[in-house]
Length: 221
Image (tube, rainbow, N blue to C red; front, side, top):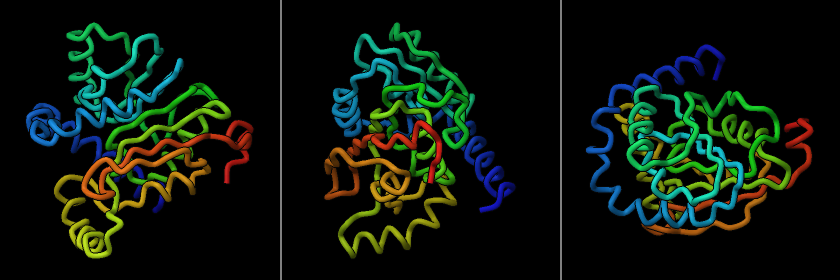
């Protein structure tokens, strides 16, 4: 992907999420009934104290932030962030909300102890670039914690997801067949554990360590 193509993809994603922001919570009401328990499970593993949440959206994760953390949360869409700010005020949650792109994070190297994201890397134009940026802003031995939907391990279902993916991308901007566990490893992380939470491997919790000092010294592969 060229720089101009990447910029176009990023702007397309921003416009798409700005457009659906007013209806996003309503659109996600039914699946969110299941997602809430998975979000809670993921955030129960967060230790901090300095945490970056990538793709905060309308703030669905805010009720699950453990007390005592210093959380910075970013999103590509200004209109999604507006809803997150409203939710933070309603909850009385102390969170620093910023507009930002995971593929070009505006934070110094080694700024965070942990980075958390839920259902984000399915829609990032280049997830490998985004995950390398995450690695850059993590401290040595920091952790990455993800809740993602991924390509099914079942051969038949996985192939069906491959065939349906172009339609999903065109209509929602979401890739349903990404191999996110493998991409996390390609970005230079060491898997700590992966947990199947739904549909036989379609929904997974992924926890990985930033264990390589190169991530901090910046000879990134």
